[in-house]
Image (cartoon, rainbow, N blue to C red):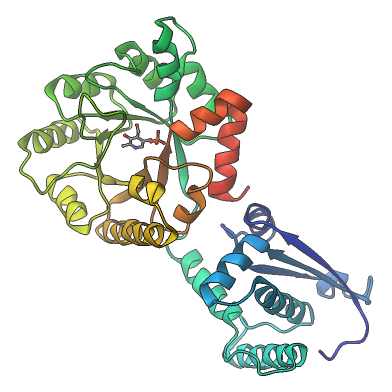
Length: 379
Ligand code: PXP
């Protein structure tokens, strides 16, 4: 590599920690595959000339990229390590095209030496990072988390007592960093009650009311003025909201509700399946946002089907974002499924309830929210 014997430090970490380093030291959001921190730059040049610096590799991203490229994780790890070390030695593909070519050639030479065989045609390290930069410069920003407190009320209603209080849960979720609080006031009042939405409105910095498009709910929304109303379909017998609104079927009720709420200055979102036609219809009806149903993705029975559902959500999110709608997503998301969703940069906010409340029952609301935020934001 053209260097005398020198020392480097290698940190193999996860997406969460590398996102934190990106944010703290590079002002970037989200995880990357590798970061290099050279010690022989600027003020540090002569302090310890034998110390090249640090290479940080995210094992999570390396594993994902290995799978996508059809290579072993060891092979991907080696590519990333070589890439990082070359940065420590002063190579920089971001400086110019000729620098990129030079770094690429050097990486291939080193990999060929290491493998004793032909290196791969083009190291995907650079391709990946380019894609990431484009995202960073464009729509890539940290998604928000809105915590749904319905199931705190479910526990309360199970005994008909006055605890646990969804408002207390909302306060704790906010203190832990949640960006918004969501509650679904159902026609049957199975969990959240009328007085809850009034108190939640007073307490939450940002309150999102989920409701069916009925005259009764419209009146409540107009009275309490949530920051956002998400219109959802509601069936009495369902365990939870089963599917998105079908806006392609003529539903004058939805249209009326949207225009009344918008007339009162309330933002309206539509909970829809990941379908570009539904997205376009939501815009036509007057919504300012859509919430894309992630349930099919979360429940997909095989990796192939899950990937297909993720692609559907991505496509719908891209269409919605392209039309100028705010894009939210939710339903069924948990600590295992959220990270795949965070790769969809168009999503502005995740609405998550059951998994957070379930975890909160065991480890506390503060920890449950922070754990979820860590997976969404990487810190
Ligand atoms: N978004 C909508 C529109 C919902 O109806 C629900 C469930 O109340 C959620 C998100 C949250 O889903 P979960 O409780 O599965 O996280």
